[in-house]
Image 1: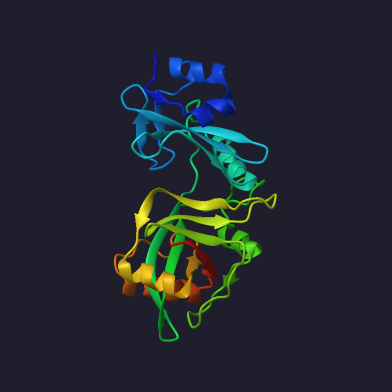
Image 2 (image 1 turned 180 degrees about the vertical axis):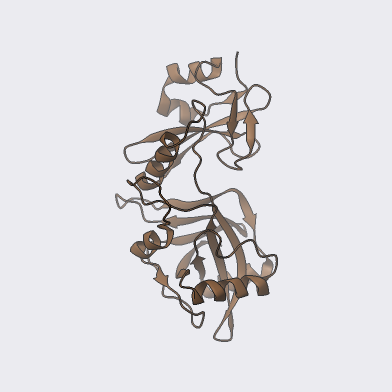
Length: 258
């Protein structure tokens, strides 16, 4: 049965006309799926569905998303990110063509007071443990060690601003948060380490602080360390607690955009 699929020209160019036509005819496309953006169920027989092709240096993975969440597109990611997605597919029985079950990075924006000055901050916490690329997922969590290897520094208390991590940046456009970018493995254009499926609104005061400092502080903690805090004072308390427990890393990322 034909599916209500959107296959963009970019995706078609990558997968070829024959594969694209098979998808549109319903031969290789799933009926039900988990949206690769919002992670809730979708049905390509009942609602418009986007084909999203994640492309690494050596691997490509085709996923599906609600058309209201993401347009059909090709997304360049690091090979490490993609291998993690592939491992999550092979590690569990899932419908053919369904997107991988993988930890999603939750991002909260807020202002953090350091040395008497307000700094714009992003707090990143995954929804699950992060396994090291190339290893079988186990009971451990390599989220912080992986970031430390990228140049993030452990934080034991929030006093001064962390040092700048060159090569990384925060993409702000038209006053909205779009992505956190990291250097590409081949030295080319930066790639998205985290990307908002819809641009995130930030407060006027947060944007003003970002423009003043021309950088954003990024704090990262393992799953269960911070939580979704509704107020900045509670967010600060959670950050202080995570730092005291040795569960926090940070870096200052230059601002890209306005």
